[in-house]
Image (cartoon, rainbow, N blue to C red; front, side, top):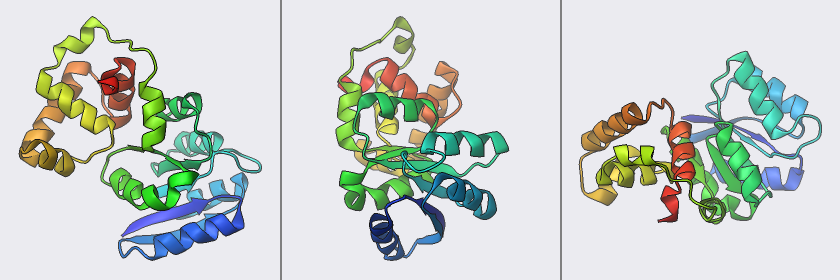
Length: 209
């Protein structure tokens, strides 16, 4: 079971999320909160697999909560659920190693998928936000050429939040082959996390193509 915590200061919206998550057989909600301090205390107490945080909350905001739990050493993965559609806030979230960025406008379409993708080690960014991020000017440098065409293709799919199994299905290759490519990509780029790969894909403008 995926243990999830929900934090949003709008009670009616939070109740809607709770109802959505309770309808999923593989997800259990271990707590809900309406302000930053309560959210932080619940994460420390419950250590959920995933915390779904509104960025703008009374007291501590989502970024501050994320920073504090990392300082404490809690490895709970964080998905921001937010009204902020601008690329600046989204890029800040990605650069902070947040695992997901879901717009409230699309919450009931994207949230279940994003939770499962993040729990499997992937990332998820709402498509409309991704388009804004990846329309920014390309910063591709000569270092990107260390990757083969296939590795760049797989890097793109990783950055879009697809799991190894989904990439294998889309490219008609085995999961083991995807895992090998992922390992080789990380070695070549000298990166160690999925968030690092996403940042690199943004840096070189890979998802513009």
